[in-house]
Amino acid sequence: MGFNDFILLTGRSNPKLAKFIGKILKKEVFEPVTIFSDGEIRVKIAHNLRRRHVFVIQSTCTPVNDNLMELIFMIDAAKRASASEIIAVLPYCGYSRQDRKEMPRVPISSSVVARLIENAGADTIVTVDIHSEQQQGFITGPWDNLYASYSLIPVIKSKRLKHLVVASPDKGGVKRATGYARLLNAEGIAIVYKERDMAVNNKSEALEIIGNVNGKDVLLVDDMLDTATTLVNAANLIKKRGARRILASTTHGLFTGGALEKISQSAIDEVLITDTIPSKPGVLQNKKITVISVANLLAEAIRRIQTGESMSKDLIL
Image (cartoon, rainbow, N blue to C red):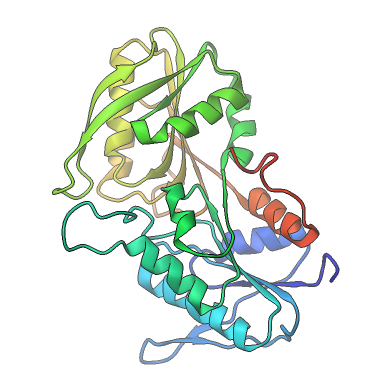
């Protein structure tokens, strides 16, 4: 099978990103999803898929369940059309934060979703900065989790940050912060400890910092910007401890719960996000926010899957 013998499909969640990926790969992107008058999803692929690799590009962002079902139906349609291999490419993977039992009588929703995708017929799953890497063990097949640093690092370097310290807004992001610090030759890392009340949705409080940020340019790195409470609390505390300049780099921009207003009023000088999720109204107009595309990252991943090259040499921290 030659390099060009593959098909790109996308649903309605993020067609702009999918088409950008197709442009880089010089491949047409097909959109097989329509909606019946009663609201049901209809998938009809008008191209021969027999014995071909099929990449289904679909972020499972809001509306999460509609976009998830579109993904499942496209995979099933490709499987029934005798595709030789189906790769589910999820730039953003919904339900990824529900990856464990935090309290009695709750599901592990991310495990259920991963098995749905695999059971529908996906041979491989590709994600970008999944919230918890343990999710890769929820399926029996390959799961390549890529890092947006491939797209973000060149932009961060162009900012010419001085006496750089890379900070994580919580202890769970230490690996990410360490990886960025290594790639950027930072002077050190810092960790902001937080206490999260799981009984109250998305409520968290920054408490203390480990590491010296006084007089430093600080890069805050995180996988997700939801309500922005964690990020803003961390940034404001870092500023109080004497940071000179604060840049935040986050992969997935959900922007819920007044996030834009919080960012505008925070100590953060600039926020970099990616286009794994389409930008909501007001995001592109916010002077503190810059959107960076991960199309080059995902196009390169697709190319390497087709040619059998390794991902780990530079696409994975």
